[in-house]
Amino acid sequence: MLKRFVIFTHRWLGVPLCLVFLLWFPSGIVMMYWGFPSVTAGDRLKRSPVLDPTTIVVPPEDAYAKLELEEPPRQTTVNSFNGRPVYRFRLAHGEAVVYADTGEERIDVSSEVMGRVAAAWSGQPLSEATVESLDEVDQWTLQGVFRDLSPLSKFSWPDGQQVYVSAETGEIAQYTTKTSRFWAYLGAIPHWMYFTPLRKHGPQWNAVVTWSSGIGTIAVCLGIVAGIWMYSPARIYRYEGVPSSIPYRGYKRWHMIFGLIFGIGAATWTFSGMLSMDPFPLSRNEPPGGGPDAGALLQRAVRAPLDVAAFASFPP
Image (tube, rainbow, N blue to C red; front, side, top):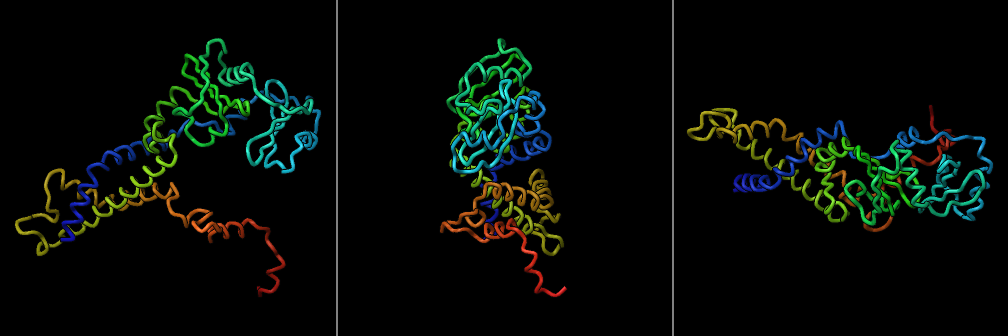
């Protein structure tokens, strides 16, 4: 009875999930070579305009003092914006920008300035660009970080380049090309289920990915158990009238063979995909009770300064 239940459940879980696995496996191979389009720190550095140090007049501490903020900045960088040197102070919530030549705070970013920033990044004339103001996320700005940078202006050129500029920071938020979008449609988008109608609703997307990968893990494990049950290494254990150790023919036979060979790898791979969504409260810094768990306490202890004197009481 139990064997029938395992085989039946494996079969009918596999019918709908086979389409999901068909998306996950080949798209994962594509992601080994092409990821989701993003702007890295290296990209920003390579495309940043040359900064003339002689134009920096105001020291960073004086520039930050003009903001009249009590909290210290989490990060301070200096670069060039619209032909002028600026300090960018990363805060707990957002960013403050102060011009390093005059000490005045940059309040807003005009559409003309955003156009010049996008054109300089793409190397294309601004007159050839199509400009869109994005009030909602699109396929390439689905992650939560882009919500902090909104509103965004999207500049598209005939050669396929698309540059997203944040009106909040004046920096490039996203950059895509025809090639990067093509490989994302074959790789990251199906693999992560980054379909815009689903992904823009974070909790629903999280639930779909977590449950599909979790149920997929169960389906694979049931298949391994069923395969071991059905496999008969010796003649005395085989089903009556079955001449082989595997009591199937045709595609069912190959399904069982490949399942026994690659099943454990498929199960661990699918389970790791579920773990990447952080589904268990014990793996988070804040458990259901609200206090720090053991993992968080361990992280704090590791990051704390090392007290060398404490080792004096230990023998060598």
